[in-house]
Image (tube, helix red, strand yellow):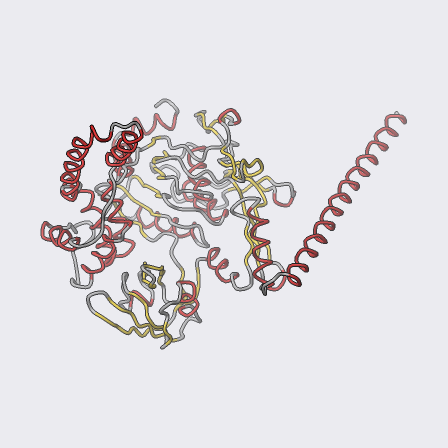
Length: 547
């Protein structure tokens, strides 16, 4: 017994010595490489042929170092710290617009409903030219945001160039802007509720909770939670949202890290709103992180059906760290695992090839099981219970969007018509479509069809094999016919183009509500959801694993 005890003590001491040696070795490597970095930095600062900016040089070095890890581990300088806080909280002092560069000018891309810009008729499509008398011509959108942001209650004067109208000055007071996590909820039909969730900033769980409570007073019998395009946010808000639909005390997500303090299990803590109402969650490839916690947990607990396309596949957790000199860092500290035990992380950042993370191989994926025994896999995001094939836009539709001709026509439409019917009733008329075709006259919206690309490849190949002269007459004839067909593309794809126009035009008058309601009648995911709700036997069989 004494010998065993001695062996145990010796082994423990050896383990401690090994651990201490490993720590000392790590510290030596860190110290050595910091000395090397300082020497390189000093030499560049002293000897480089041109002047260097020390702050920018260090920021570049830090960013390059963190880029070797994953795209979610980031450093924020003192100047960037406020932008980072905005990402986390969704709150800032300003007028409630998003802007971007368009043709070298700053254009209003969105005006948030209920905030100063919208309330004072600053419009999407307006080009901002002055703020408080200071020209912003030749400035970028970042410079403009600095001028627009400020303490709530302070005045600001914005001068814009409004297409078709001219210069307009707008006086307003800044307010505390808190972008809603739930920009819209309502009813699709008599008994189907719909909740659109676009973020996971503070109070996201409460917003979903309140939306469902209100919808239940309107006699809904089923609900759709739309997470499409939602890139995620705060983990605990994802838990709160799951809690709206499941009982208190359920495990939602577990985080695992090399630091014990970051190993945690998150459970639902509150009373739910409704654990029985039929639920469908919509996801797409833009649904990531917290969106995958919600959709994956709903799936793992067999609480609802997931519809759409496979989600992004981000199973990593970031933590905020305050650093010296008012700088901040967001660092990946853990992976998360949902109730079945799976991690949805799709890319392996610890094993890169040519500097790029590799997709988790199918052979390395594992099968897990939902509460009812349905098989689900890790390493690939959340795979919907019903996958809906996406309809690709036509070449002409893509071109009209990318060249911003849909955007420009909607701007012109808004600046010539003061009002339109409600989004669900608004339709682009025959006269409107003719006006759009007239608007396009003289505009550049040239594009190559797949057939034209194939023809060009054939022509190149024929030339290389000395067949071009023999085929030239036929090729000219085919090209001519293709051009005639392209001239008819506006009419051939009229339905698609009309839908794009209706969406952009209606959003100028009714904002977030229009972005949702105008798509109800032609959204394939919603059509699939409504069909499933009418077939309760199929809905139940999917959750039982017997579909």
